[in-house]
Amino acid sequence: MKRLEGKVAVVTGSNRGIGKGIAIALAKEGCRVVVNSYREDEEAKNTVEEIKKLGAEAIFIKANVTREIDVRDLIEKAVKKFGKLDIFVNNAGILVSGTVTTLTEKDWDRQMEVNLKGVFLCSKYAVQQMLKQDKGGRIINIGSIAGLVGFPGISAYCASKGGVTELAREMALDYAKHGITVNAIDPGVIVTDMTKGMMDDAATKKMLLENTPVGRFGQPEDIGNAAVFLALDESSFVTGHNLVVDGGWTAR
Image (cartoon, rainbow, N blue to C red):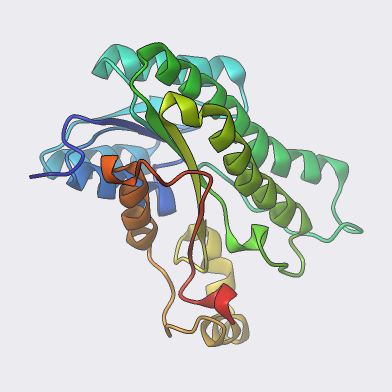
C-alpha cells in the first residue's frame, strides 16, 4: 500500500532540483501533486510527465511565491482541482552570493523576498486552507545547513535560511492544537543546478566532499525521502523539528 494514497501536496519550486525530488518522492507514495514554478518551462512539464508515468496524478500551476495574489491563486487552483490540501512544501528558493560589505540592498531584498517572504505568504494561505478543512495538515519548510552554521560569502542566504528554520518552530506552536505540524528540512550539499558552480571548481568540490563524512554528496531524492517521512500520518507527533539531512556535515 502506498503510504500517502489520497493525499494532496503542493511543492513550490518543484520543476527541478530538490523540489522535483520531493514531488516525485511524494508521488511514489500515492500523493496527488501540484508542481509549481514561477515560469512554465520544459522542466516543469517534464516533472509532471515523470509523475504521471509513476501512475500518480499531477498538474502544474504557475505562481511567483513573492506575489500574494499568485500564492492565493495557487492554493485556490490546487483545491479546485483536487478538492483539498494536505501537504504544503515550501521549497522555492534562490542563492545570492556576497558578504555584508559587497551585497547591494537590492540583492539582500531579493534574497529575503524569495526565501523568506515566499515561505510566509505560502504558509499563510496553506494554513488557512488546512484550518478551513479542520483535518490537520503538514507544512514542510526547506531550509539549509547554511541556516545552522556559517558559510563564507553568502550572508543573505544564511540569514534567509535561518529565518525559514526558525519560522517553522514558531508556526509549529501556533497550529499544533489544530493538528497541523510544521517542520523544516535542512539539506547539506545536494547535487542540483544551484550547486553546479561549486561542483565545477575542483578545489571547492574537494573541500565540500571532505567535509561530508558519509563520503558522497546528497541527491534530491535524499531530501524527498525526508519529506515523505514528515508528510506521513505516523509523524503526527513530530513538529517544530529541524530534520538535518547533510551526510554528517554539522555533526563534525
